[in-house]
Length: 212
Image 1: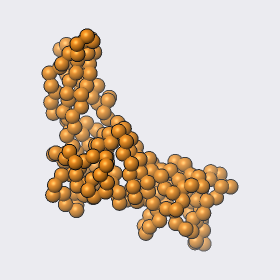
Image 2: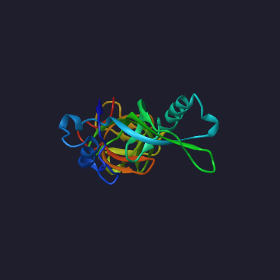
Image 3: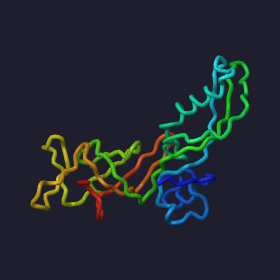
């Protein structure tokens, strides 16, 4: 699901959370179906600097190459993780900085971004397990699940190799959460920095936990 957003509200600041933040990113009038999406197609503006030796008949190609190398795979606290640039809309005329010859251009482009929200259910890969809980990744997003957000029937087994959380409530093979396990979790909190997004999750709910 990729939701098109034609206008990014100025209210979509990192200080907003949950539904209010989602509505700010989507714009006024976002419906329930639109709110279920965490991938967005949005317009972004970015300043690029070019060295004088790159100025010339191929300046547009150099700007495109630098834009893709700079923004794809990067993270912005305002927009989220920039997955892919889909279209370069426009570029301004270059402005030469006095004394250096460096030229600045303002690029406007559309991109697909990934931005998680509180309450969303995601599939993640476990990367580390310890007595405090476990760490997992949802693509580029790091998520921590505390031991208090793990079902009570799962206990930490420090003697196993690797260390894991084990549930033995059934007569079948014990269910383990260990590095490289696939788990389904719910986002309960997010933290936004200028260049990073981190999340806290839980598997202590119906239909969450190890994906068999």
